[in-house]
Length: 305
Image (cartoon, rainbow, N blue to C red; front, side):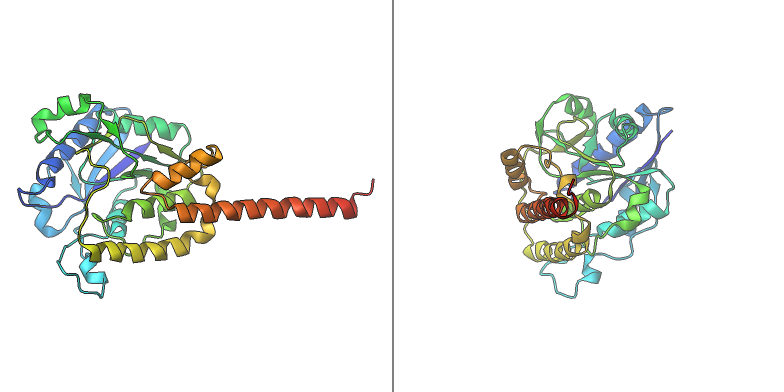
């Protein structure tokens, strides 16, 4: 039986925040999914949090040690507005260090899960995948209470291209390069995804599974706070630089599609970078041309029979 540790980062928010109603729904759907998977897969529900967030976390979660730093502590620049955003590496460190589960799951705290979520993850693992991403479904934002969960999970919703549910074998994590990427800001999804592209032996992107739900139909969110965006943008440049020797375009999503389809998919997906994909595609073509050139030369010189 596989063991799965699912970690999230709850945060105490004012009543005006979308997370005020989204988080309790997330908590409860995780509890129900764990109960649904009972005797089929062993699931640990984990959180990591700042000390002030404890009071909102249900007792069916195991609280790993509190976070001790945020993006405010690692960036020398002065942010115009102080936001105590955790670093993704600190969150995942808690899961890796305080659980011995075979697989680690990370989702944004506003991502609810279907009752069959953990059982489906177990089935995907049994297919031989050591890492995968599950894209969410979007539903209308009129779901605001735990009592509405039965109707919410019954809604088919619409697809979303972004990456916000990551599953990977624990043996991969020591290889990850995450720099000082913080949560709640663009470039977190692309950073995690590119680590999976690099280090997984059998990665897969699932775009049409009805397993995770986000309340709200928006595709691109207005994040504001350009200084935080710029921080993550610069951190991702460092991540990409260190991962570059490990990149193989054939391990990227959509690489198996026909030429025009894969380029359109790379262009339209907000968690992919078309410039990087084109660069890696050229590297693959260059390596192939070099291989066949030497094949022809060696055959001409040495194969005289």
